[in-house]
Length: 193
Picture 1 (cartoon, rainbow, N blue to C red):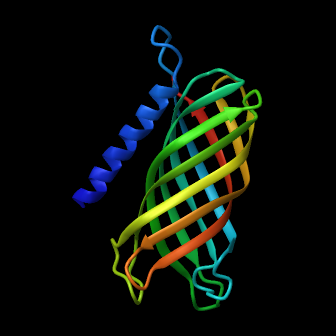
Picture 2: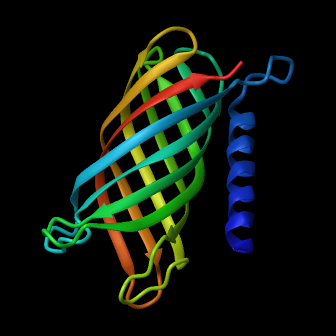
């Protein structure tokens, strides 16, 4: 469990560092912290013939550290995500999937109406499979080229990512468990005081 805690601390540090590098000059106020709650789903993957892995859903908590410039906001992001896999056969049910924790960069642009993000980090299997034990870990990459944003005031924004790419590799030893998911994500972001 120490490896997960160390990875979590490293991810938070990386997100804060990326945000501080992207911040305004040293004499300005530090960029505000934002928190977002997201829900995602995917019926598209690279596993269409594996009915136990081709549908997924889940949620995430995202912390962002970026400036307030409406034309170009670059910053750091930290993500904690739960991804559950759903079987499409009648007796398959759900599989506990993975926990993903990571950090990356994001940019809000087009007067606050679009957000692009790239996040990478640790992916931990949350249940036993026939070939892998719970707790097996690998990596994940989450790419969101263009998320649509609708500000609901100066502190709140609603966000929709019509199509994002998520690469999951929670088991790297043979046989590898590698999934590519094409996700739709909906979220609400709040700027903290």
